[in-house]
Image (cartoon, rainbow, N blue to C red):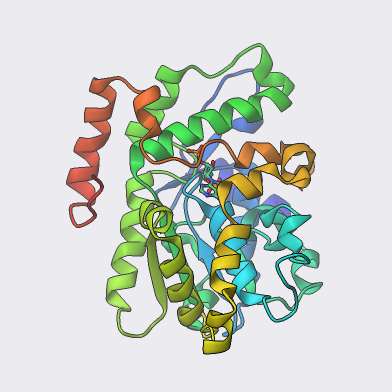
Length: 322
Ligand code: A3P
């Protein structure tokens, strides 16, 4: 049996979330308690069996729309600062997702995109439970970013609408806000349940606390004090800024390069596009919308906000969002 047939057989036995009878290729499947579309799930199953992490790999993890593009731009700039300066940084001409590939999305099943690069940074939206075991066994460093659940939902909603513009099947049958809210609350969102995604990494970061293996970060903290987090991230990565670099304001320059207004105004991010898998094209500007805290107030009713808050209180008691 071919690899693809083997995975298709496994996937066909999984619980399914239907979008519409008209376009089943956008259905999600529940694997190890989380929801994924077919194309990602095939990669996930393959990676689970075959991906060999190196101890030097650093994984940038986070669910969708939690600030992963921004985190990639900061970490990439920290890592490569001895090779580029603030005028030659590849972040100025490439989407951050094209600087750091995302394991289950950008890397094809033959790993060609991974073999080509010995670069230690990799991204993934995978829940902790679904990470290939070699990442855990190799004690790779993990940087995890999470975001206030209501803002994460709202950001995902706007992103989905942008994607729908490029997918003909959705043009005539757009998903409604009510339906998307229902799926999010039931945990049936892409890579959801969102709260379980966060709580698994939170638990792992506590279990592995003191071993300097998982850096757990909130979008809101990064937004409120980017400079000090850039310094903490550099230390965590084993690349602390020297006194000379501090004197030359290297951390401040990295913050400025990756600041929302700067990134979103770069030509590549205004007019470029990203093609992670055959048939999927995302305009780069979909990754840069507002970058604000509390934008949920512009979309969600009080009742929906309360429903989300109740689950957050129940599942993530130890995380506080104002
Ligand atoms: P909004 O939709 O609320 O604006 P991801 O990168 O994980 O897809 O998350 C996307 C969210 O991060 C979007 O949130 C986007 O605008 C925001 N974002 C992107 N770049 C950012 C930056 N440099 N600073 C702050 N937020 C940023």
